[in-house]
Image (cartoon, rainbow, N blue to C red):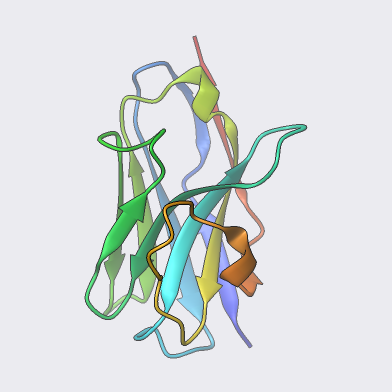
Length: 128
C-alpha cells in the first residue's frame, strides 16, 4: 500500500524557514517523479517542485525558485522541501505526491495530473 506522510508544517513569520518531509512506503523509491504541491483556500492546486528519485533532477515553479529546494534521501525513502525566505503568499496546505514509474518530463508548468498518489497535506502559514 502506497503511503506518503507529510510533516514539518507550521507557522512562521515572513523571512522564516521551514523544512517539510514526505516519508514514503509501499513502493520502490527509485524511478519515480516525486513532487510538492500547494493549495491555498479558493485556489487551484499549484505545483511547487519536483524531483526524479533516480538521479535527483529537479524543477521548480517560478514563484519559489531561489527560495525552495527539493531533495531526496534514497536510504530513508524520504523527500524534503526546504523553504527559505518565506512570504505570506506561500501560505497554503502543502501536499507530497508521487508519479510511480514515471520520469518528471519537461513541461514548464508542474501539473498535478500525472501524479497518482497523494499525501494528506501539511499546513504552512506565513504571517507578515
